Length: 280
Figure 1 (cartoon, rainbow, N blue to C red):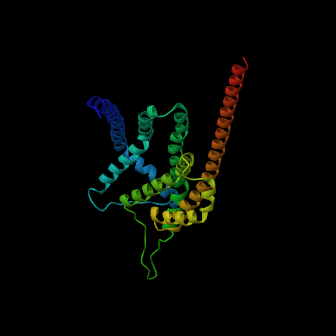
Figure 2 (figure 1 turned 90 degrees about the vertical axis):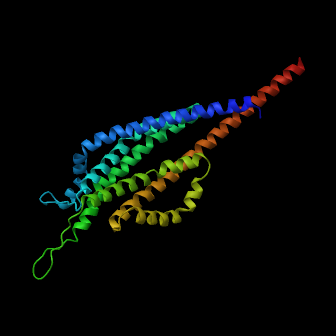
Figure 3 (figure 1 turned 90 degrees about the horizontal axis):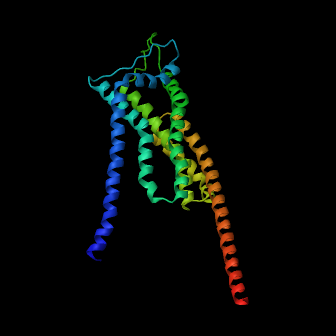
């Protein structure tokens, strides 16, 4: 390869690296700005996250959360700010990712990619809402039921969660549900790439059930409510993914049939033109 060929091939690579650096800069800048905003409102955000606990305990309960180290609540606020920044900055990050890869895609590929880009945060928010409004109150109600009143020779057993442990619990559940709710997007993209089919997904349904409950046991706290609460919606999403894969396959067959019809029409037209030339 000549020096001119090497220079010509390296120029696009440098341009892509510069473009990547620019997109990363915008993403990091968005996270940094939103981190500062979320840190300012960290107490308010934490109070919002405590609402499922309050709902489980009841309106008359006098809830108390503690921290046992001087720096513990400060680091909790930092985690809240980072968590909120990532959550709020996702549209910016996704947009920068799309702008980076869009020039390398055909127009129809860009149109096909956009719905999945929109569906990803929507499904994550759906998973987070399921945790916030249903799973977390049920889980906290389960934990609160283990308390014991003192008297008659019995010790008082009272739930006094640390702020860091409560935040870790609800963040773990939100991320676990948010990630698992991406299943239809992932499987649909795999089906578009031809890596999975609806028939293969149906044939492996029993394995999916086992793996789902294993994943739920790993990703959630060791209580049955959280595990079942994650496993059941995931299995429903798996069934939705099978339907989505079937629709992708149907659309692919229709496009292939249309393409074959167009090629047959072009071939017939070329033969007709050749016959006219020979006849003349």
